[in-house]
Image (cartoon, rainbow over all chains, first blue to last red; front, side, top):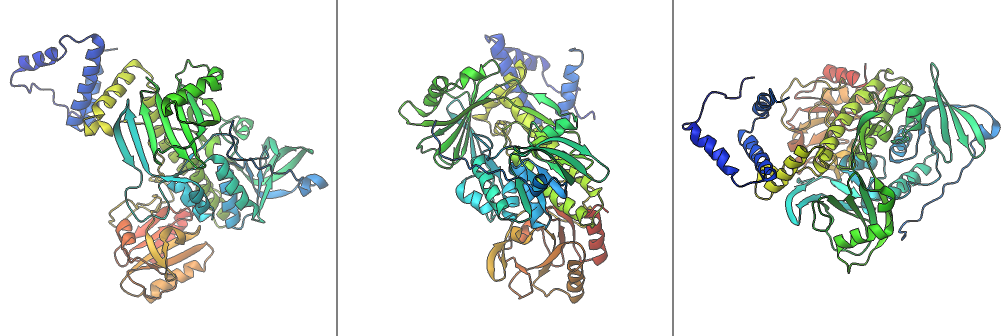
Length: 65
Length: 551
C-alpha cells in the first residue's frame, strides 16, 4: 500500500495544469472524453504497476458517489 | 439451403433390459452423446469400464455449432485414437488477426514454438466431430450407445442412481452406479436436481451464417471491430472444411432474431462482406445470444456434471467444447480408479475442485472478451474505442485488444492432488500443469512424448547419458507391477537400448521440462504433472502417487 506518490512532484505545477486544460481546447465533450481515455491508457502503461493504478483509482473515486 | 453434409440416422434398438422388463445396474451411465459424453465413453472403454450412453436424439449435432477445437482437446482425442482423423479433416490454423475498420491492429500466434505433434487449433464442423466420435465408439464392445433414449427422471439412492428412460417403446428404469451428465447447456438432469445455474446474460445478439464459397482468405481467425462492411459492430471469419466459411456478425440487442434470420436480410450482409460478385450459398443461419454461468459444484453425490451442463461461456475464445473435453479427461481416470477400488470416492471431489477452477478461469476470460466486444456502459465503450485507436501505433495497446482469448488448458495450481515442489525447476511444467509435448524417439522410431502418456500414470526418469541405476529401475518396475496403472520411461540423450526409453535427441524434453540427469516427473493419467524431483526417491514417489489418487 501507499505506493502511489501524492506529494507535489512538479517543478512548475501551473504549467502542468495549463498543459492539461490546453490539450482539450476546441474539443467537444465527446472528443474530450476520448482524449481522456487515451491519456489514461497511455499513463497507466507508463506507470506499469497495477497496484499503483488501483490505488490511484480508489483515490479518484473517493467522494464521487 | 446448400448441404455439404448428410446427417447419419442412428437406429433405435431396444435394450435387452427394456425388451425383457429387467432392471440392470450399470457401473456408469453417460447422459448425452455430444463431444463431451462421447469422449468420456471412449475413455471409459480404454480403461476397461463398460459404459451406457443415452441420447435423446438419433443423429449428430444439427446445424452450425462448435467450430474451433484447441490443442488440448485434440491431445485428449489423440490419446483416445480419434485425434488424427479430426486433424486430417479439419482446417489447421494458429494465426489470429484483429482489424479495426480496415486496418489490422493486432496479430497473435497460438503456437509460436516448433516441435509439437498436435496443432494449436483446428476448425471442424461439430457434426463431423461427433460423427467421428460415434464411429469410434461403435467399434467398442464396452460402449452401449442408446439413441432416442431420453432421461425423464433421476433419483439418487445410497449406492446408485435410478434413471427413468423414455424410448419409442415406452418408459423403463435403468440403474447406474454413477451418472455423468453431459446433456448440454439446457441440461435436464441439472433441472431434475433443481440446481442453480447462475451467471450473466449478455445483452447482445449475433448472427451466424455458414456459407459455402470458393474464397482465398487464409486459414486464420479474422476479427473486425467496426469493419467498413458492418459499421459499428463486430464481425468474425473462420475457414471450415468443404469450402464452408463461418461468418459471425454482431447485431446488437435490439435486433429482431426472426427477421435477421431471413435470407433477404442475411444475403446483403454477406455480400457487403465478400463483395457483390463473390458467389456463395447459405448452409446455415442462426441468431444467438449467450450467457456466462456455471454450477457451483460439478459433483452431486453419484451424479457428475461435465461440459456445458456444468458451465456455459460465450463463443469468443472457443472455450465451450474445449473446456468440456478436459472435464471428461479429468473425470474418467478418477472414476475408473474408484470403481476399481483403488481410490476413495473423495477423489471425485477433486474432479469438481479442479474443473470448477478451470471453469472460473474460462468464465473470467470469456466475460472479459465479451465486455470488450459488447461494452456494457458508455464509458466501457469509450475505453474500448480508445484502446482500438491507440493500438494502431502503440504496441502496448495491442495487448489490450480483446476479441476473444483463445482456449488454453488450465494449470491446476491449487489442486490437493499436486505434490508441491521441494526442488528448484525452471519453466512451465509445474505441478498441476498440462504436460507439454516434445519429439522423442521410441522403439527406434520418431515419435512424441504425448504418445507415451497413454492414460496411465507415467514416471519419467531423466537418465542423461548414463544407464538407469539398478535400484531405480527395480523400484519403478515394482510400482509398474503394483495396483495402479503405471508405466515408466527413461529419458536418454542418445539411444541406449533401455526398454521403453524416450530418446530426447533434439533436447526439447530436457529444455521444456528443465531436466537434468536424475530428474523425475510423475504425470497423471490425464497428462497433468503431479510431482517432480531432482533426485529419485522411491518413498517420495509413492507418497506422491498416494496423494494424486486422493488418499
